Image (cartoon, rainbow, N blue to C red; front, side, top):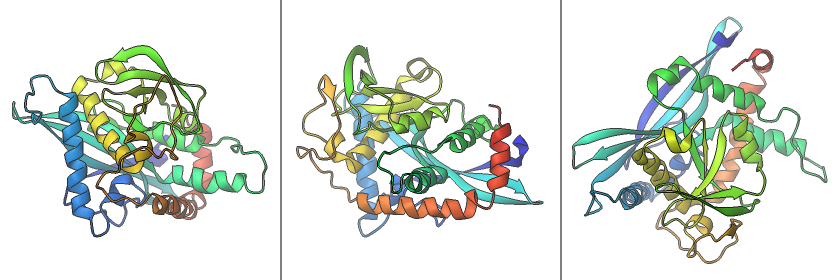
Amino acid sequence: MSNAFTFNIKSIPFDENYQPSDSTRITTNFANLARGASRQENLRNTLKMIDRRFNNLAHWDNPKADRYTVELEIISVEMNIAANGGSDAFPLIEILKTNIVDRQNNERIEGIVGNNFSSYVRDYDFSVLLQEHNKNKSTFSSPDGFGELHGKLFKHFVSSSAYQERFSKPPVICISASSSKTYLRTENQHPILGVEYQQNEFSPTDQYFEKMGLQVRYFMPPGSAAPLAFYFQGDLLGHYTNLELISIISTMETFQKIYRPEIYNANSAAGNFYQPSLKNQDYSLTQIVYDREERSQLAVKQGKFTEEHFIKPYKQVLESWAANYAH
């Protein structure tokens, strides 16, 4: 049954000439930046911000702060479904791959895969399934088995030959801390990741990623305004090099400064007790155009697309596969 689903990985550069393909999830952060009148300026400024932050963190043997540049690839994952005697492909996941160019040594260094995480099935889970489950209810809750199919599909992908042949290390995903939780600063400090924070309780996102086989730790890198959430397998601090960690921080902190400036471009840094808030008024805007409201509307559309083209037509196949899945 595990052979019912196989994966095909496609890759395109994310650079100032990037234009989203018709099959790209339009809620994907980088796709949103690459639309409209300001698209090329948006992309150019975003990439400059990433490089500037990378060199700021990788400051050793880098006196002019211009030694490194980050190249990004958008990794699109299609799942091939062998069902009803045929084979269909569904666009399952999009992630980012960082690559580091060392200009001083004229060397290209592999970075981290993961970074950003976009998933059609997650859109369905949060924007369709969860909303319908809580319609007309006074107490918010999750349906039984919420996130389990998505988690199994993700684990199946990471353990697949398609992933293993392409990438040498497990993925690390980096997103915003939850504005519904409180974070406490700890004494633990890493030279690159910075000061570790611990949340008062798991957020729904933490629980969702846990079903994908990923644990979470929160770190506020040097010079940052707020902790970032890092989702990973194994040993985050021991398994990845300093340059790999810098590549994910510089990339995802830049995106968060654009998307959540109230938190990540705040004018004062998080203290010992910290609760992120999108209502914070004391922050700076980047010069990059982004429509946050449009993105949330598109998530609903794409969740319904997933229901129509994936969840409903393959319901029996998916349920049977998930029931027999052993990671």
